[in-house]
Amino acid sequence: MNKTKVLTYVWPRSIRLFHWINVITISLLIVIGLIIFNSKTLGVTVDAKILLKTIHISIGYIFAINLIIRLVIGFIGTSNEKWSRTLPFMKGYKKELTEFRRSPKQAYTGHNPLGKLMVLALLIAMIIQMATGLILAGTDIYYPPLGQHFAKSIAVNETQLDAIKPYSKVNVDDERYKQLREFRSPIITTHLYAFYALLVLIPLHILGVLVSDEKSLGWFLQ
Ligand code: HEM
Image (tube, rainbow, N blue to C red; front, side, top):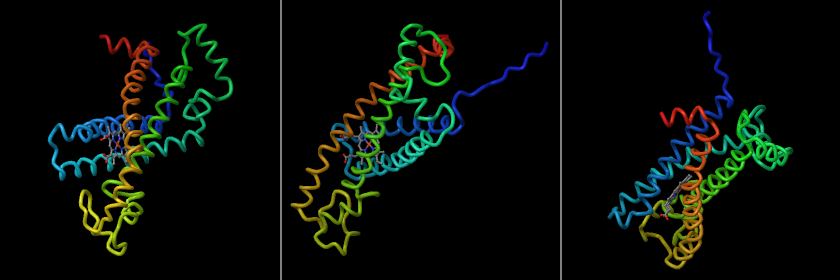
């Protein structure tokens, strides 16, 4: 007899698209971020550093738009993509966790209770990266959304903002520039620590998927 396999997707197309755009943009942001971080050791020139930051920020915009769309879908979605089915602090989570402890091998459509905790941790780290990254984009190479504002804050002559260029002192007030560097210092630190957090969370997330989905593990170990 001719048996036809019916493929049922757990996640709607929008979420699968979000996920893979997220994977690609984060991977690129990590690689370029690592080069920026090690630019002195690698002997990267100032021009190359500006270019790396421009590329990092451009990819960052795609990452941010994709993340914002996902955040909105979580509120307006009707299926597994809803935050009420994806995050760990929604109604019924404690009961779900107790049942999971009792029989961890049971099948779940969507995330199991530990998966939900992981989604929350990843979301927090990504939102921090997005917020700090968008601020940093304005403080160093004067990119949107806050670049104009920061350029104005350090300008000697506010009518000539175009003269303010990355790593140049033209039309820049030294004292206010120093203040801007002090302002951005804790933001860079936060961006860096959220990056470290992602370096731990991402492999754990992949491991969790492989362990909880035996089919993936089988494929992986083949
Ligand atoms: C998961 C997402 C991201 C990761 C893993 C990441 C990673 C990094 C890393 C490792 C650095 C180097 C930090 C340092 O030199 O101390 C960096 C720098 C930077 N990132 Fe990101 N980033 C992400 C998202 C973003 C986004 C969304 C933006 C903005 C749209 C952004 C803007 C910047 C900027 C402007 C810098 C340079 C900071 C400086 O002036 O030194 N990043 N990022």
